[in-house]
Image (cartoon, rainbow, N blue to C red; front, side, top):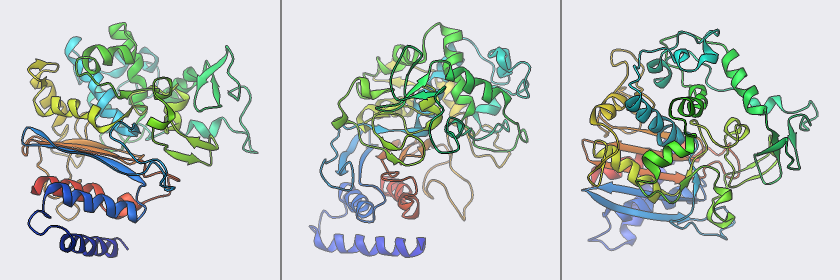
Length: 411
């Protein structure tokens, strides 16, 4: 099936080539147009934003399609998407890199030396390097949303209510509110969760839920205030935020999914990730919303070795440490918080043409960032591929992100 879809794309691309202006049709913009329109026509996503930075400037910053398949609201460059796990890089890892600098953290230190609630758990010997590289053996995820439902599918009243009160004020959708103490329960579950084989690669988001607590403990600032002070305000990121519903109109926020299992309503303006939602929408794991233009300055910061327009925000050594493979002699391709290319020639990831020095991350909702220091370029792709349902697999089957990277590196 995947091979057939790729053949169809090639045919589509050739036809587009013949229909366009012959002398200019091979331009980067027109090739990207063909790719994204192909994805939309094959229902990989209803719309998308693409930003490509290369040759020291933005080569493309464009929106495609519509917010949903009804083709009513077109995507604009100012629209915000739920970034999902790209939050791990643009919030979680970013904050930790600055904590690492400010408080002289040793990556081989035990996390439990800082987060004392882990002291008497099976995670007491886990190091920062292990959790950041997904080699600590921690569970990938805890489906907290399944634990707040009765057998008949209704919410447990002691956890979630449909009316906001002093005790139920954590909002997870337009009409649902969680008990104020539920965040503590999530932390206890993380502490009690099982640990597998240490040193074996197992992608896990649990550590990133602990980052706001660590940030507050060390800096005295909330997670948001810390990120704002050291990165988001200096970089003037006006459309990158947690909890966008309090700042932007619904029309500016792209719907994510029609949630048929947990919230049982359209998720729009509230974080899609259920665990992050139950945490109040703020975590190092998921929760950020942004448009492509507000992500670009962070990636430019990475590309420029910690400097943005002559302003140093991170040390060169910090970036080098976090963006290289944590365990280069192992099969684990990961850096510290960052994803890295696969060295498997038969199944290259994320693209056969990226350099070994490149790094980035993907998001479950259909988002993707990738930086290649050798090519001096980066790519931002934002979509709501989970609309109307997370069962939509077209983004993967059509290799949209792989092809987008290839187009960037070829031009």
